[in-house]
Image (tube, rainbow, N blue to C red; front, side):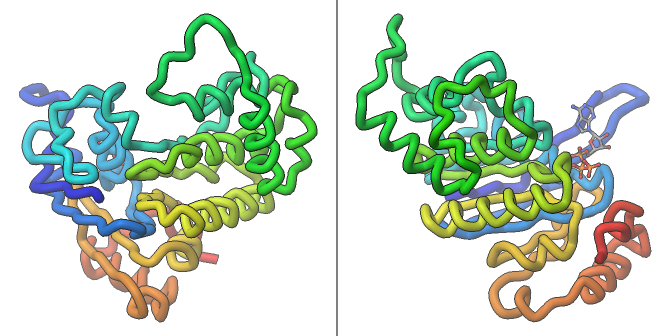
Length: 265
Ligand SMILES: Nc1ncnc2c1ncn2[C@@H]1O[C@H](COP(=O)(O)OP(=O)(O)OP(=O)(O)O)[C@@H](O)[C@H]1O
């Protein structure tokens, strides 16, 4: 589903600010793998997701999504394979458009919309059905402006949109970090439900080690642009936050970031 081979990314190459953010990353995800990604600040987690999404070109290596070599494919073309949700709830949806218009955009992704915003009745029914999954009563507010909704409501709709046409790959970059704890938990539960329901291959960055252990079938830990730990299945299930911290301090010579420590409980 996703294969990353020897990926290298250096920012500001040849200048005093040169920074190698990814130092030969290799990663292979099987269909339905739900992988949580942890690591300290500046470890390269976002750069990994951004490189896969094609936000910038990589310096070395190869990226294959669903068997297609996308290494040199521009971001807008790669978008047909990828669903993304970012940290900022304002980014994934258009605030000045209605809920149903946003959903229609997601449903017709990659197709020409034409001049008319003609809804087929079945599409409205489908949107209502999908929105009712959220348990937020939004199925009765199809024509409400997205900008009027709370961060959690917007992030939930962004998730629905990102998964509406089953993507080959779902990329979640700390998508609950800007939400209050209760809302974050609801959005995480929704994420898990959608990932299981559609058997989505998923990479989810989180700073919360408990969440990294609770969700997904596999966990990778990054440090200094490399994957330093990759654990799955029962071994992951049986791990504790303390085990993770120990792994991290051994591999990263004690460089456990403050945010990771804070996210311990
Ligand atoms: N667009 C960019 N331009 C320049 N440098 C960048 C850019 N994106 C990331 N970097 C640098 O690359 C390194 C890795 O950053 P990245 O954002 O991938 O880390 P991260 O693990 O996601 O960290 P955090 O948890 O703090 O978000 C850092 O040194 C960062 O400053």
